[in-house]
Length: 297
Image (cartoon, rainbow, N blue to C red; front, side):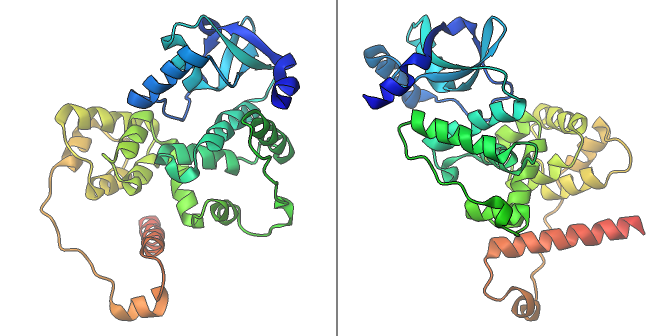
C-alpha cells in the first residue's frame, strides 16, 4: 500500500519495556470490553498502526499509542512498531499527545478533564502554530485520514477564548471554565469526570492552591463528606491558609436555603432568548466580580 511505502522506512521495532508513559497523560486508557477487544485484535493481527515515541537517551516516552502499548503488553508482545521522534520541545510533544486522541474521538466524547487538556494546548501561545499544523497533518496521514485544512488565525480578530470556543461549539466563558479545570489536582479531575463533583464546583476548587486542594480531598475522603457550593465559597473566602479544622467546619451540612429566582423584568431586559447555560455563566461571572469588589473595599 502507498501508506506502507511512505512510512515503512521510518518504522522501527522497540522493546515495550523501554517505553515510559507521557507524564501526566491527560486521557483515560481503555478498560473492560474495549481493552479486551484491542488485546484480542493485537494477538490476531498485530499492531496495525505504529505508535509514536520520543527518544530519551536509551529509552522512549510515549506520545501516541498508550492504549496500543498497554494492550500489546497484555497480549505478551516484547516489541512494538514505532516512529521515533527526536528533540521535540515539551509543547510539540504535547501536541502529538492531544491531537492523536482527537483524531480517534470527537471533542464531544471527551471527559471534562480531557476537554480541558485539549483546550489548554489550543490556548497555549507558546506552541508555534505552523509547527502544530505540520504535526496535525502528519498524524492525519498516519491515521489514514484526510489532512485537515488550517485556518488563518492571524486574520481573525476574535478574542482568543471566543475563537477557540467557535471551533468546539462552546462559548468563550465555557472555554475559560474548562481551561481552569487544568489547575485541579488529579483526584478532583477524576471526580469531575465521574460526576462526583459538578464542573462548576471543580472550577471553584481550581482557584485554590494545590496544597489546599489536597487537604480538602484528604478530609472529604476520610470523613466521606460532600463538597457543596456553600462549602467551596467558604473555602475561597477563607482568610489565610486553610486548616483541617476549617475545612471540616465548612463541610458541615447546612439547612437547604430557598433559591433565588431572577425577576422576569431582568430576564426580559438582559437574557431574552439566551441559552440557560449562557445565562448561568453570565450571572456567575457578575457575582464573582461583585463579591471581589466588595472584598476589596
